[in-house]
Length: 385
Image (cartoon, rainbow, N blue to C red; front, top):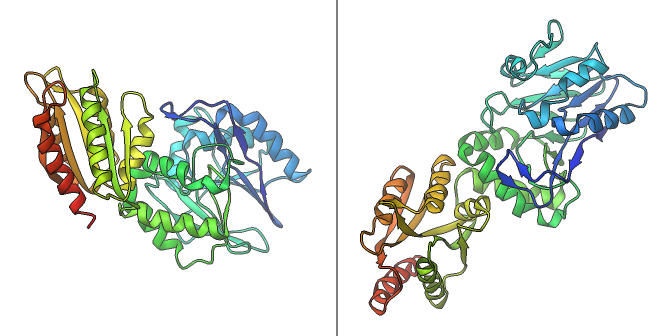
């Protein structure tokens, strides 16, 4: 039997101190009850006491034999010392790398004789089932393992298949916050995620139990696997154009909006637009990865690039943005330079095609800017014919 013992954190406003959480977050933890009992991961330090209460209620007087630590990130491992305090005889099961990392987060915690190092292919016998461990390094930390329970065809997937929000959020809306979570947390690690998907493909999986978000079953599970195979390969999920703009006094915003209208008039299947000065940047990153084409419209600033746009493109760099067509629109009253900076930044990324022409406006949109924008709109729209 598998029991859920995780906790919601509806009051948390930022995940990893940077990602907005309009609906809070959940920290999932599980009990596998057999002749022997295994805990699968713990929780964040904000919720250790609540987690410990949930654990003890679910155990109903029994004692756990093992604590499986799949991932040492603090939002999943803060309860390790509490588990050892409550159950001194428990054995911690984790990768060798995770065991090495424990001292980084629990200074002075004695683990002598209390750990079992496991690797890919190892099993943990609980009596009527043997948990199987699968290596998942760099999804998205190097010590990660995931765990398969063949008795219930369940995959405990660590941070893979996670999402922002509390656990009981609308399951029909899984993809939106799972996509924002994936590209901002795991986006850089498409290769390792793809390798993990290959490892689990032969398994009979009827439920995925991630460390964040809801349990996935049935159609939801099939859709999650479909999307993860797209995301891990940096393939296009939605053919269309995402326009991201960073405007100081409104001139660049006007150019972005005019270009959006031109693209819609030319039949581009989907056009989305975002103001990087006020909109959630994590959502902008998500949309850039989701769509086939990206247009960056930005003001020049201090001989370079307006910081909101610079920050956006920098995040694309560190998240391994690739295999996309990008168009550039710059604005500069006396010395336009935003286009050069943006082009140089995209040049560091893999398989990026820059759509011509580079459009330059001076302060505000003028009648003689229309032909440049129209030529760019024509070039982009032709990709969809």
